[in-house]
Length: 129
Image (cartoon, one colour):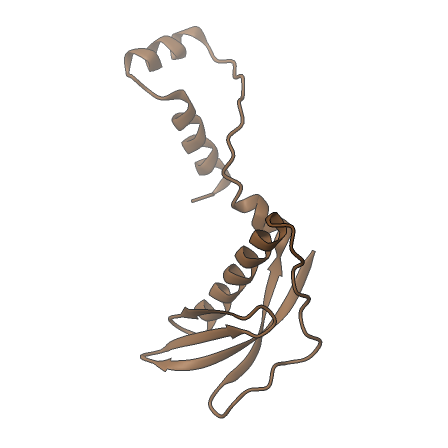
C-alpha cells in the first residue's frame, strides 16, 4: 500500500538538496529536487523495513505538511514498503529447468554458469537492471 511522508528540502548549493524526514528523524540528499524526493522515498522505505525486521513500529506519516524555515521546500515522498521489500529481497531460490541436451553440453564446454545466464536472461527479458 502506498503512503506519502512529508519531507523538507533544503538547498545545499550547486543544485543539491538536503532532505529531512521529520516523522522518522532521518536525512538524505539529492542532486536536484526530483533526485532528493526519490532518495527520501528510498531512505524512508529502507528505514521502515529495518524497523519492521527489528519488531519495531514504523512511524505513521504526519497528516499535514511540515513547518519549513525560509528557503526550505515542503513536499512529500511516496512509498510502498511491501514493493520496496520485494525489490530488495536478495534471497536466492532453487529452480529446476529443462533444456535440450545439446545446449546443456555446449554450455558446459563453454564453462557457462547456468544460474548467471538465467539471471541475465530474465533481467533482460523483464527490463530489470
